[in-house]
Length: 375
Image (tube, rainbow, N blue to C red):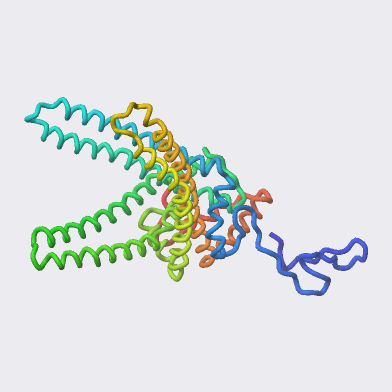
């Protein structure tokens, strides 16, 4: 960095006086405005709302092998595991039911149903694990891309891996809270409607309507206030409790901006998803309805091809959605810190120091006296 007290304007080799620099204007004039530096993904300044909406798509285009490649590989693996595990268990369960004696079929059917349901928990758990890893990968990509760095797939995964356990615990915590809330409301409604009956049935219906509305509003509010927790876990290496507290603090005063950016990006992505996949679904339904149930196996080929194509398109678009939505959350985190903590100045100093070859600490790390960052 240049010492402002010792700075002198550049001199002209012809006149010996101050040189005319487009960035500063004519000699004696006030310095002209210069745009903020943009070493990589975004300019180092608080982001306009339009940038929050469209920069996530730039993340996808800037480093597609590491971002889209990661998401597609993970989603394809989860889909394959789901088909293999649930499909094989279902096939085994049906065969067992068919071969069971008539007097034992009820018991066998109940056991087979439980087995199939339990088998579905395996891909569900793997999906949570994969989702947490992808969040860590996308947050890391956005943070390093902002500094002008372009990491490869393996580098991103190695950086995100140490924070995977905390991300998984956070994901399970969110899911557990949601299940408990929905389960409690469902239990109350069932008791009022089916057990109490009579006049209590009306109360049960009212409780179901307003309870669902209340849970939805509360869930959206809590999700928005804690939406940048994954970024804090990865970039600031915080534990879950410290990350929740800090996310709550950073989003104070910016709730509607945080919610609006995520909601609009989700709307854009899901609209595109529906526009692309709906024709495949309609064609598949039409072809399948034309097939005679007693027809030969070859008659199902067109419908099967359409269904496979629909699955392939859904995987691709699902991978794009994961990248874009995860990148949106990371960009919101950067924007909030730029607005409230001057992170843009820290990032500019980091980039300048790195270009000069100096060793500088990670600009994203924050030492909070109320909590100790975890490794």
